[in-house]
Image (cartoon, rainbow over all chains, first blue to last red):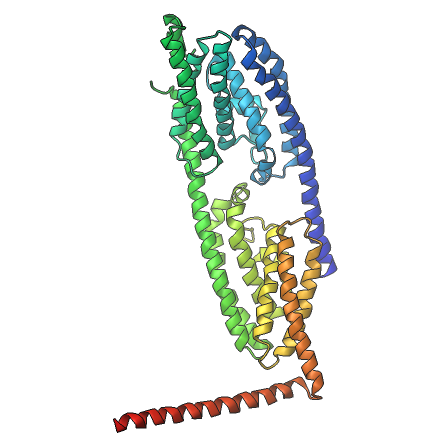
Length: 232
Length: 264
């Protein structure tokens, strides 16, 4: 190679590594935000259901602030290179999806759609070749939420809330049947899907316990099986 | 209990997306294996032809035959073009990369036989373009460097196995210089391309094998104050006499066995 060729290749590689550094800075920022979110959300296990809405109110601005980082990322990524860099932030993004999905469940009792999650995170269609929410990341976020809900089922009972496990059970069963429709290959999504059945089992045991001991009144159990359906 | 219909519909969509992803991934892995296969065969083909090639023009011919074989690979890439369009290339980079590096290795070997130099990044990218001049996918510098880095191993084989042939000693010396330059040029890229470090270790091993051969060439030539071609001739004469004698000997043994047969 002559010195010009060497210099050219070197320069291109330098540009790539500069870009990587810049993305890493944003990802660190993203990571900080999602850790704050996880910190706040871990309090749901010790919060009575009537105080949950105010807990979510304190966390919501943090979730919305993630969209600022996502806009920054979109401005850094070159066109068509979404898949090249996405692994750098997918952990943070999945955590953000988890938070958005948990908010939606705790507020409205329904499953947030991929589209709504994208909107909450400020994803824009015009830069979807640079940053977007892939189905895979969304599904990973949902699994994290189910993992968390299986704990919430137990902890709600500790706090004397016997209806929450029934609500969670119906909700999680829907998600589980959704996942069962997918043809998963032997990848991380598959392994994490395998963990879902333990969550379902754990939730079922809690439902079994509270039902047999007649800790839930008949009306409320009816409500729990049919979660507030403001989805159409 | 039936699943709520909106969840059902969403997951139906995810199923299609995931199926499409997995199917495409499988197809690309298969194509990549085929590409690796053709490229490896081309490398063997080039070795065979280069070994027989006595002079530069014969090596150019060998290179041409190898390049023709590699058009099969280019056709496969042309077929993959749509699957890798837009942002999709980066999604499947890991599936495409191994075959691509093998192809670059074969291509750079053919290029070396013809020009005696290293194929450039732009020249490699130019072979992966449609008739419209638009690249099938963006060639990464890392694939280029890792592909041409494997060339040094092939050149070691080329230098050593051709060593005993006429002109082989001179070629070993030339190859030695070329591989040494490759090693020193690639060194500065190792912080950027992490697998390149391992390849450099292999290049160093190949280089030292060629250096040992080149050393032998120089020492032996210096012992006899004759031009290299004459030394080759002397060796060839000896080989020729030996093999003629052996053939005669074999014939005698054969005849004897035959005559033994007739006594039975």
